[in-house]
Image 1: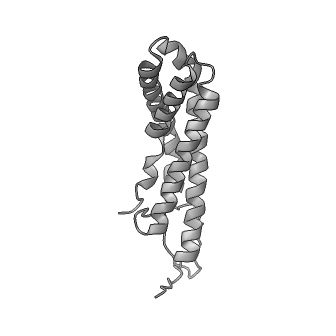
Image 2: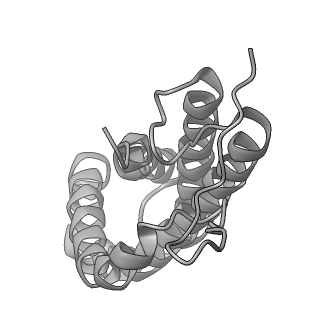
Image 3: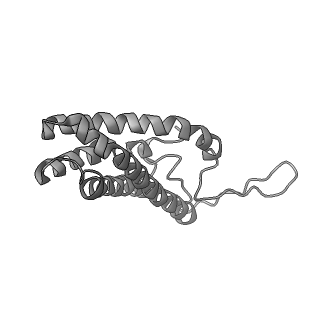
Length: 168
């Protein structure tokens, strides 16, 4: 059975219009989120890179970190933004076809869960590729160690917060 939702109205009787690809609550969160997100991601990327270099590189840990951290941090953000675009496309499709929201509750339907899972996996793959091909290429790691460090970065820094519902 298909549910049809009434269009919400403003106090003056005009219809409320929401952008289906961009959640309205993000308008409030977005400006302040960058202030906390950038240094937090830098810290997490640094810790994961240092652990990876200590485990797989075993020498010149700080030298390799200085060579890779900036590119790894920037390309990690690019990967997260591209994955966010996928989530926003899924939000639009879910709103138009299923009258549900992916952002409000990623566990609310199979479509929402699968679309968020795909976007997190895509971000992880992009993080791996960017780190392996670009960010870690100037380090003194051999190919197998570079591949393991890039895989560690991909698994540890994928955007798992996409699974966090906006409303419980």
